[in-house]
Image 1 (cartoon, one colour):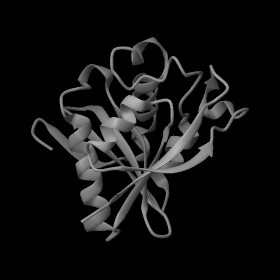
Image 2: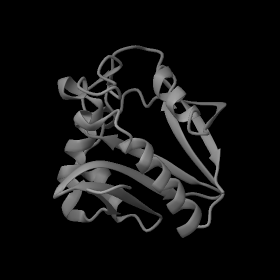
Image 3: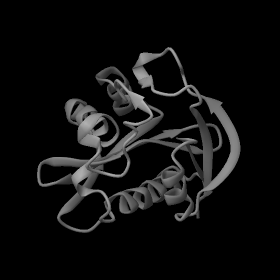
Image 4: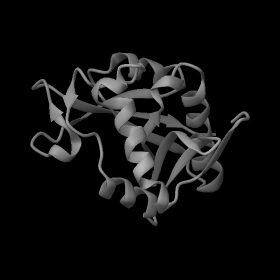
Amino acid sequence: MTSPHTVRTARPADVAALVDLVESAYRGERSRAGWTTEADLLAGQRTDPDMVAEAVTSPDGTVLVVEEGTDIVACCQLERRDDHVYFGMFAVDPGRQGGGLGRDLLAEAERYARDEWHTGEMRMTVITQREDLIAWYERRGYVRTGELSPFPYGDERFGLPLRPDLAFETLRKKLG
């Protein structure tokens, strides 16, 4: 991460700022300023304070944040699972997308998983309709697995689907 950015582990006091960041990157009109918007696929919330607080305080994971001065401008969640680290809650402030910040944070997350937790693989799930985002991950070494999981229709904590065919695909990358 290059200056003036710093990376650190999220703290409980960051929860409100993290919820706002994630919402701004994916939902509603604010998200349309960046390219990661899901506003045409989902309405409603992307996350909530309880889900973010759980991620921040989980003994099996961490949330990395990127600060620019005192502002949190990017984040991601890492969660230790049986034989891999799960990567999620990845968000970059819409006004800062496209400048390499997300690429740098993804690389830092991979380094953290490999060097701090000694894991050899990172996995994530991406909405299958997000071909542009999947292509972005593929350019960074992630491979589509073809493993699909259903979108949690009916659970408004994850949003209000605007179409009936949403699903997630698992992507994976060997680390190291």
